[in-house]
Image 1 (cartoon, rainbow, N blue to C red):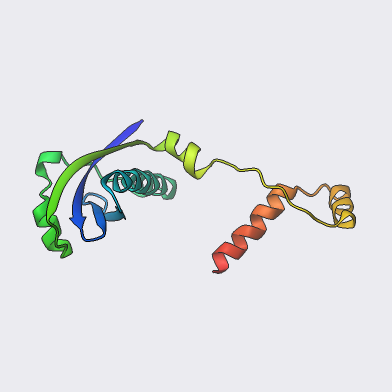
Image 2 (cartoon, rainbow, N blue to C red):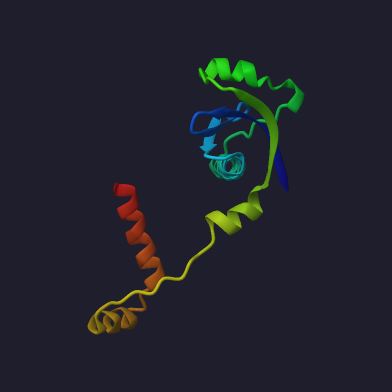
Length: 139
């Protein structure tokens, strides 16, 4: 299902800032294209996590009710160019491709450790994922 939200784009010295007023969510990019790609990614992530957490998902405002100048004042953004654009994403399809997609990794372990793990029916992928998550979360 396609989700569509208005986003305010602000041209700044080093690129573009993007703000979704309905979601209190922001991102940025060095070019308009990069800012739009980041906006899609950011929107997909926020909507997915709101749904997963069981939090309410705000309804999108009509585009003609979003005032980027007022948003820039509230956010204290100084911009020479502001505009509103609708950002759309199929959250489930995007998540499958970008958030849930598995990648294959090749690793090397000692032969004795491989033999012992195989004898114990240890799932190598699961153990590696759990260990990597623990490391990443500890940072």
